[in-house]
Length: 112
Length: 114
Image (cartoon, rainbow over all chains, first blue to last red; front, side, top):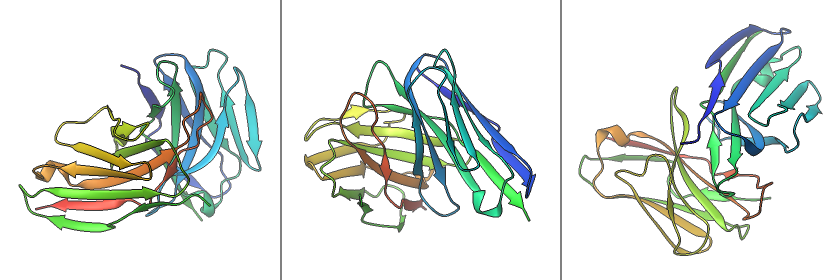
């Protein structure tokens, strides 16, 4: 079945360093969404990418959707302690518009 | 603001007990989901529903059932709880559209089966 793989599983960075997490799907996606889950919290929507090759920015966060719509990345420039949490990608399958396939998440720890 | 409310935040149940996890959303969303979250495994879809009385199996439906008698309410049922069902359970909802459905999550229910 469809799978979305996400790497790395964990990342520890010093405050001010950059961070990137990657998602790869076994099949072409209709769109991809990114979520952030703070420690002890629930996932919260960050952004959605729909078009092939799309790039979107939110302050220090840059999101990319691959040309083949099978991979995506989230890059954080100059991390801050407020970036701590787990970042999930969620791909919407082309076969079922109701079913999102979540990556396993990347847990980011930022040392001050 | 969209609100997805899960009735119980923390539960401790005994092996073999029947467990009900309730979820209510207030945004008239068609889609509702139950996920399970375990360390290193991310979010795994148990069941989802796109309409009242409709349900579809997710990736790990074994040992679970669901009920959706009203649009705003989606229940997850563990017929006979087992220790390997100890986990955090997340309910979520979204609109039914081609794409562009932001998923809204509840706060989560921490279930411990002893």
